[in-house]
Each structure stands twice: as C-alpha cells, then as structure tokens.
Length: 326
Image 1: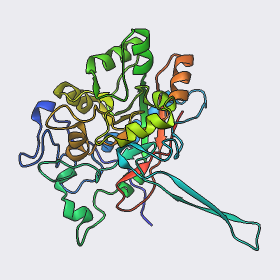
Image 2 (image 1 turned 180 degrees about the horizontal axis):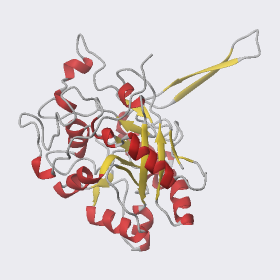
Image 3 (image 1 turned 30 degrees about the vertical axis):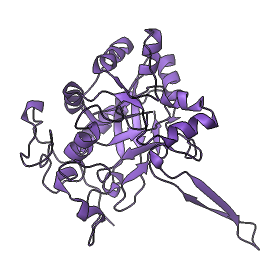
Image 4 (image 1 turned 120 degrees about the vertical axis):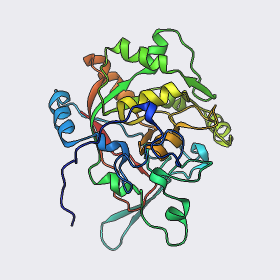
C-alpha cells in the first residue's frame, strides 16, 4: 500500500510567452515543467495548502450538490459514436440477492478526459512525449493513466461561469448543436457580471446550456445529431487568447458541453491537444450544472469547493467524474 505524500513545492510558473518549453514537442507545450516523468500536469497546482485554504473559505453552508449527469442520459445514441450505457440486474437464486453489471464508454456521460485520451495529432505524442505505442502498442504500460489522478482526486476551489444565464440576460443567441464559438470576452463578461474572482489554480466549469438543450431533443433529433461524423457542437473558441487565459489561471477546466471547445475545431490545432497533451490539464465534459447554477444564483456566489474522485483504473483513458460541490 502506498503512503500518502504531501504536495512538493511548485516550480516557478513560466510565462505564456515562454512556451513551448520543449522545443521538440507540440504547440505551447509545458513538457518537463514538473519533471520528465510527471503524469499529473496542471493538477499539481492544487497543492495541499491551497486545498486547505479553499475548504476553509468555500464550505459555508453544508449544501452538497451532485454534478453528475445520469450515466444513461444520452440514451442509446451518445455523440461521437460512443457506446451507450447498459445495466444488467440479475438475481442469484436460491438467495434473495441481486447483483448488477454495468458496461459503458467512460466518455458518454459526465467525465474527465485523462492524459491518454488526445495527443498532438501531427506529432503523434501525448503529455510529456508519451507515444501511442506506450499506451496501446505491444508492451504498453500504464503511463499517463487515470489512476495517477485518482490518488488524490481533483479537489479544490472551483468557479462556475454561467454563460447560459448571462447570454439569455443579454439576448445573445447560442445554438449548442451547431459548430460555433463562445468568445473569451463573453466568459470574462460572465465572470464580471457574477462578481466572480478568479484565483490561480481554480477549477473552471462553464455552463453553456448544452444539457438543457439536449433534454428537449426528440428521439428523431437525437438520431440526427448522433449520426453526424464528426458531431457539430458549439463550445469555447480556439484562440491564443483563450489558451493563455487557461494557462494563467486554472488547474482543470470543463463544463456541460460534450467537447468543451467548438467542434470540429476551427483551427489547425485544438484545445484538446494543448491542454491534455501539452500541459496535462484535465478537460471535463457533460457535467450536470443545472442545480449548481440555481444554487449559485440563490446565494449570489459562483465559487465553491469541488471534490471529484476519478475511478482508480490503472492505465484508464477517461473516467466518470464522481463530482460534488460544497
């Protein structure tokens, strides 16, 4: 059994203009910042001290809110051609006992993308230069697996940027199931309208309104959207300004949308490449943020304490969030 360890001191944070750190690596990479063999990436910003301070400041009422969309929320046709959730419940006679078996794609509901999920497409490498062969080839290892993140979880101060409410109040159109971008200026305006302070190392969650829109689709609508390859969804913009904003502020970023960013990408690169393969920054998708948004509005505060316990699957690619806010 491993022994709990305290967080090591953080190295000096490079300026965005200093990236890429590894000149042989991918666009804007930070390879080697936490060591050549590091598998945690930007989660190292969630130091023990920061977690303690965040718990003290953010846990005020004891109200606890689940951020987990049901595992079967996408029904039989999840987007991105992913497998649907199946549950098999069976009795074990002659006893009055039941067991169940679940099968599902870890990215068909609320989930964190791990560091094995998306690499630099042209370079063919993942975080800290890990190759496809090291993950899925002969002699593959568990390098960059989700079990590393599961050791301490994704825990700390988080903020909700309720773009969905802000854009309705400002009469701004948004179509979740069409390729389109949420500009950085809108996210900054949302934070300003909420009076939300952003602190270094925060976990950022963005409510786009995707799950609200999905709940209104008919079965035929879902078939149409699921048949699109690649899917067309709106999300945060691909821009250097967006990348810099994330680098300078957060330890992880996610939201209620299925890809976080606009998809298909509108550039010759994607946020997935830079965040996951470049920085080791987890990307959260398909979070259920509806109750949280309602509570934040009621208490007029959009920061909270987040605890997310990824499943301890050695060598796993992604994981159901098991997330809860306080």
